[in-house]
Image 1 (cartoon, rainbow, N blue to C red):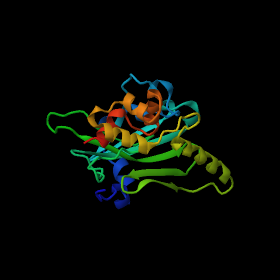
Image 2 (image 1 turned 30 degrees about the horizontal axis):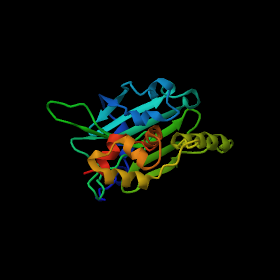
Image 3 (image 1 turned 135 degrees about the vertical axis):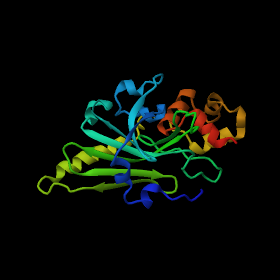
Length: 239
């Protein structure tokens, strides 16, 4: 994998630069696979809807927040600030096959923004999240980069008299990243990769599902759990 330094790791003032100062308005399109987790309210999870959210832009930085009615009731006291960078070309380092790795859900993704006649395509890269709760002074910082994966850290002061409250709140916060596996048919990722590469451009989701001994819907659900569409996976594996 090409070694490109993680912007968050290399800049101790990343969060301040991305969230302080004068901002201009921007808009972010939430990909379907990002909206599949159980904590989003039900209408955001619908397949045939286009969901956009307001964002703030400061220089190259993009910042958008989710809270309240964005979530199902259990999660509505949390605020998730998702932060990234908009650039004229992809900034995520490519792997050894020159493919741009897909950031992990639930909050991170890479996508082109709207086409601008003056600037051509702009690319949005979301890879940092700050999670807070209205009853706590503690925050969870999560960030991802292809060269080091997803990293978690906690910041803030746990209440000295009632520390259990903070601990329980942020035990719940880890639920944002918990994958639902109950009842899921096991699919071998290596077999899926082998089937796609062996079939090449002729590969279809149905043919690959048959090759690995799974139903078409089972493969589709597996793709959703792994934060990918069929087109994205095929493009990554077929030159």
